[in-house]
Length: 83
Image 1: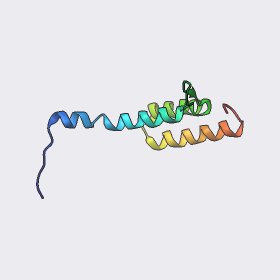
Image 2: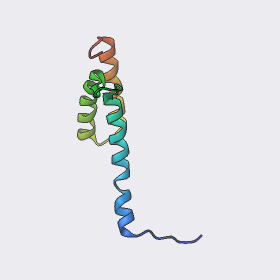
Image 3: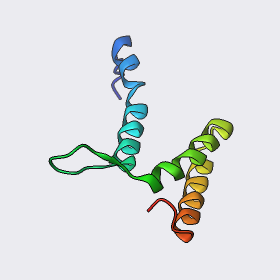
């Protein structure tokens, strides 16, 4: 197999790809697009993102972020909060 080496600047650039993709996905779920108007906040998703973000900061575990986020959204929907 042929060995291909990438330049250092390309490797540095590619390290930012995962964070930019996650940021785009988060922003897409936190805002509601209204054609002809400014975007509005999706309150339920914003409220569920708070404990999920805290879980991510404390545990550094994607599994815990997902579990806490799903549990937070379930609680919000059960009590009809934010929607």
